[in-house]
Image (cartoon, rainbow, N blue to C red; front, side):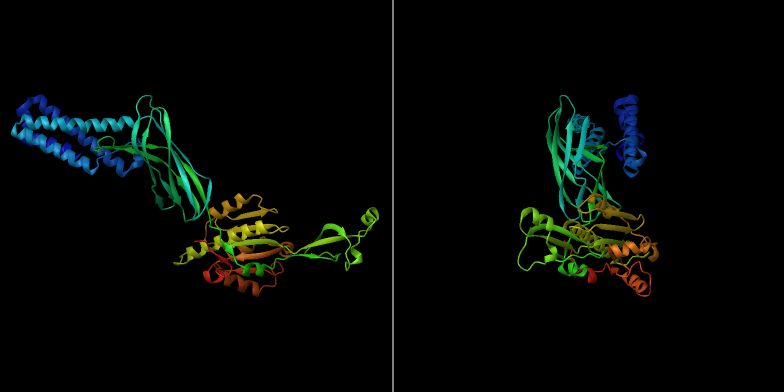
Length: 435
């Protein structure tokens, strides 16, 4: 734009082109300068307000291109002022490669396709690989030195990884890879991709956008629970030799029938099997002390967060995720239920084992905190049956408020509820957070 305006002003002020080439030369110089000015203005507006233009193409002069263009302009002006055909010939010999470089980059960027292959879900802090696929659909021209810039966004954070493709033959595709390690949980959005090239001379850089969009869920990092946590919940597995006929919190299940041994309780003799095998057989019972777990995560944060509030909240989610994974993997008979109380509350009812685990981890990845959550809304939905059946653990950044409320409450819904805070002082003795 500046060069075009300079050319027009110089001609109108000095009339050098008119004196050398006449009216036709002046008109050509003014039209060329105007065209350069309009094109430069369009590029400036497109760069400042990309949403105003539908075109995904871009143009950029690198430092080498600017230096080359300035030398060309100096030679052109010198040829006009000094009336030197030699300088004009040198200018023409420099203009040819410059125009050829611009045309070649424009041609190579046509008929390109892109793709991306990445996992649907990863764990925070883990390194994973993303595969970029670039396809050259031209029938005769190979493309060289293509730089693909990917974009990864989450909220205000922005990452710009890039992959270089040296050569892609016609009608073929090539794959490139880059690795990322994302430390924050949540949903990340990938795309669009931008393909740029300066080949062959590096004087002009052109680019085009590829509308390839994907999403990736990043889960909270799973740590390791300490023996103190297991002792806190009092899990145990043991064999017993007596029958509990009364109904209670725990239940006995017959494990097997075996031969009678000296010291076995005669009441355990299974008479039908003994009569059939003609030897004494006794029943052996396994007593399950696993108790169903209800984990409630209060996603409250103050309206004006302190410096440590976000870190405490993320630490609490990592701890909750670790508890869920350990419970599903280590408990044989008990089930797990999880309630996430945030902007959008989630109730997850898990069966025995790791059923629907992805749904639970997705909820942990996308849950958001709120300052509008009340104490009663966190405890809402608990009934007497749940309190007797489940071991209830409440995880909250305002643990002291819940403890005071439960201490002065006579409600039978939560007589054994355990309240844990999200601070490092409370959670560090219970689990090791992965770095």
